[in-house]
Every structure is written in structure tokens, then in C-alpha cells.
Image (cartoon, rainbow, N blue to C red; front, side):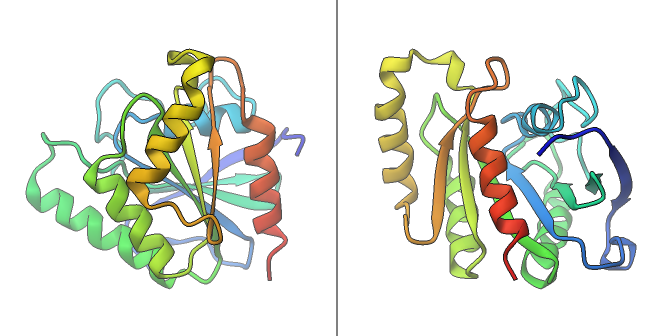
Length: 197
């Protein structure tokens, strides 16, 4: 998709604040600082539209970005950051769970993991939760440029093994915001989900 128009429509903390209408929504989930904002910025051809932060756990709302009047990208608060209070984590968890399980406009979730490491317990729990509820998932291994190309297959195998990856219910892509590798394939997956009834 050629992207020229993107706007942050709303930063929501409860369902009453979600955008109205029936535009499809694609959510982006992952650990704090796994590269969600960098992926989003790469997809929409912006250098710093989605907020990137050196402070993990900074995103505390569901940020709805309207892309080309055709789809919402939903930036979900990062999980797994130790310095965030337990109360805040529980509050975010309830907000995220409610959105992911009850939002009819949600057509798919891009679940980000770090290509350099095995998935965390939170990554595995999120993947299991999404597949349990039958939500289409694209697992994106970010920061692929940080490992040599010759180790990509090993990294992919390690990630899939840890997740107990279900190829019938989800897809996988290596990605680098530095080289843009994987961008077209991620967009292809998003556009396919947008077309789902």
C-alpha cells in the first residue's frame, strides 16, 4: 500500500473511546522496546510518526492511527517492563485483553519478538492467548539486521520452537527497520487481513 495520509485519531484507555465505524484494525503487540514504533514507522514511511522511546513502558494507551482512511494501526502498550508498577501492569493487561477479545473490527495482530533472543514467557503467553481465541497472528522477528543473515534460519527455528508455532493459524516474518527487509511481506499480510470478512 502506498501511504501518504496517517493520523493519530485517538489514544484510548477504555472501549467508549475507541473509534466508531467499521474500518478494519490491526494491532501491534510485544515487549517494551521490541521495536513496535520502528515497525509502524517503517510501514507508513515516516521517520518518527509513531512514538519511539528509549524509556520502556512509555506507551500506556491504545493509540489508534488511521492509515489512508482504510485501516487503523493500533499500538498496544508494551509488556514485560519490570519498573512499571504491578497495579499498572494489571490495569494495562485488563485493557489489552478486553480490546483483543471483544473488538469486532480487529482483523489480526502483529506480535513482535526480538530476533536475537528466544521469546520471553510473556511473548509465549501472548501468542498462546491470541491463537486460543482464533485471532490471526503474524509473528514478526524484529532487529534481524542485528544478527548475521546466515543465522536467520536458526533464529526462526528457535522462535517457532519456543512458541510451539502453529503454521495453520499464524505466519512468520523476519524484519529490520534499518534495511526495510520484510516490509512488503508484512504489508501483504495486513492487506489480506483487511480483506477478511
